[in-house]
Length: 116
Length: 117
Image (cartoon, rainbow over all chains, first blue to last red):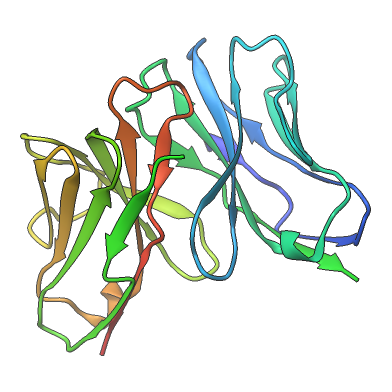
């Protein structure tokens, strides 16, 4: 089974609107970390936000927030007030176990296009 | 935040030659580094886990004799693509785990774009 599933290959959003990028995960480990990365056309992986499995509150970082629904095993990324510079590929990732040295599992990504 | 560099950022080589890619953690020590490969419009696929001072752990289907990994110090890991062929053309990304870091402490390099002619 896929560890990380991103069902939206492409998304469009109007500038200044909010957009939600979906991510579901599969693990039996009680300790895990969930991540979102942005990859512009340059290829660099830009860390956006992190959610630990034991975190009680949803993570937020500026315009990014993570809608963590543990029972549903979903970790959707919400981008508020979209900007043209937000156009990029977005990857959801998971690290199983408490060890930060464990590998990441990546989803297939969602291509976001912000329309002026 | 912590910085990871990769060198070169892009490389073009002839088929049959070997190419070395360096991954450096610039301001922290990294016991563990990871090497990923990304084909166009696809996700990152883990190739191997590199641990300082020991042999790398390769993922299933990755040829260890073709993709040589050396993690000789706490700040440097190298990936050598030996006898490169056009199908090895890809975007190679490394990431580094900061020793003793928190749950989100794994940092990615900017990637190396390899084109084999």
